[in-house]
Image (cartoon, rainbow, N blue to C red; front, side):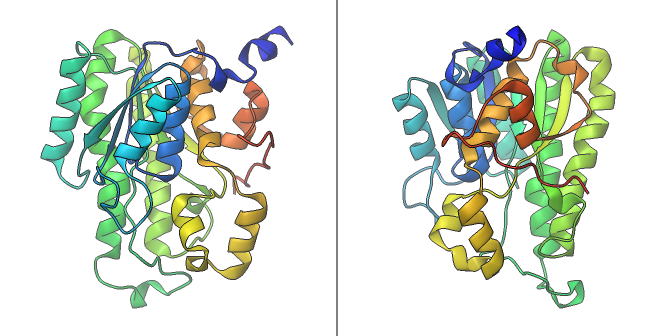
Length: 289
């Protein structure tokens, strides 16, 4: 009971004061929610993405807006314009963080994801447009590997660190189309195998699954989703910050190595650590299979 009370609402205290964190793909969605929660907890949050300024993309959200909100809430955010489809761009971003933070990165959240303007739903793989496979695998799978590979040596050298990879139930259930599911499954496997290599060095790697998110993209164009699914998301969907509170709880857990190599559902972590979504709800966890 005492441990639960200690961890309750961990996202609202300064449990990560001075922690150096990188969140990839933080202009909007889960990435933004994670960045905000880490900032609330006292971390120095570097947020990467391609959309630096307001109005720089067809979708709502930008690094500028994310960082402004982190700072307005009492945190410290830093925008890193970065194309995760370009290895040199990623290397330059990581080098900047290392240079400004004396070679220290404590938390890496691999979240960046690229999707077409209209995600094909229930469309046979042989009818999908050319390039969809390459788009989903390059930014959202390969990018996680590249970023982790650049960050890991510095965590290994310090014998501490946490790499969080965001995925979803699309890894085990048919969701949208074949390339989408393969990308999600790849993130799962990447996270678990990285944990194997990192374990002797006291560095943790996990994969987390949020539920359906009421993201900026969804709220701007709910008709991109099948009608029944859109209705379900509006009624029962999670905020992006719910996943962020899960990341904060994991980063603050002194026994995080016990969870390394595991698939962790955000809703289950909420019950374990004692936090809620921003509206006070405890959303139901998605099925693991």
